[in-house]
Structures are given as structure tokens and as C-alpha cells.
View 1 (spheres, rainbow, N blue to C red):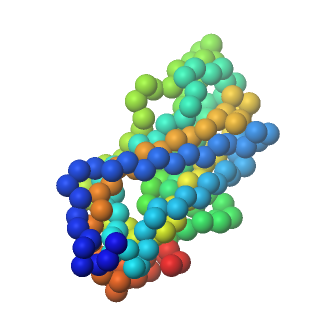
View 2: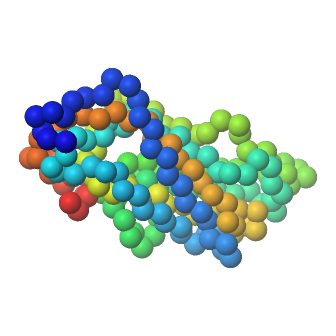
Length: 172
């Protein structure tokens, strides 16, 4: 799309990403990279309004309380799950899951979410999702963690795109 024809969206778009925790040790960081379709010549950036995150299980038996850590970043191939203060991180959260007395938990029916107010403008051809637990538990192994990004397009020129990408540490 040429810059002269790029226009802002009125309605929300959804981008779905997921990552599966390691099958032998859920504390091993899992990463999955996704192509956003954005580029400096495309004339558009994403305005992120909301991110929802949820694991696939409904009820599991656990031996201990666990913390699931999830991050979304414009940078890929991080050596460890990036902290919130690392350049490129647009979303980072720790979800504490407490086991009941009998050791069974039921995951919430609604995803955990973060609303960006004001919305967040990004320009990156890549998004990477990272996930791990703080304590290994067989119940979390091979669990898929999902995220749905609510966004609209926003027109940006090449210079603006590159400046936004640089801010987020996104190599273009």
C-alpha cells in the first residue's frame, strides 16, 4: 500500500499469537516469532488497544503454586524471557496460579488482559511471544499460551515508521 493511500482504521483488528511451553521442563523459556506484515514502505503502524492472554487448560492437578510469565516483544531471539524494562517489550505479565487444598485449580473462563490507555503505536515487522513458569510442574509442560492483540492501523510515513521502530528496538 502506498503512503498516499494508507488510512487509519475505524474498527478493531485481531492478531492471534501463541507459544507452547517446553515438554520436559516448563521453566525453559519458549519463544515463537510472528510476522506482522508491517514495513517502512507499507505506510502503516499498529495502534495496540488491548492484549488478552490465556493458557489452554481448563482444570489441572498441580503439586505447588505456580507463576506463569509471558512477554510480547518486537525483538526476537532473546536469551531469556525479557523483563518489562527491556527495549522492545510491549507486554509483560506474571500470572500467579494458586493450588486449592486438594491441588486442583480451574483456569478462569476469561483471558487475562491489559488495556493500553492511551493506545500504543508500534512499527515492527516482527512480534515474538515468550513464556515460562517459575517452577517446573508436569501439568504445565506442553501447555499452549495464547494471546490476542486488538489493534487498528495508523498511517505513518517512512521517516515516522523508522523512528517508531527505533524506539521499540525493532530491526527493520
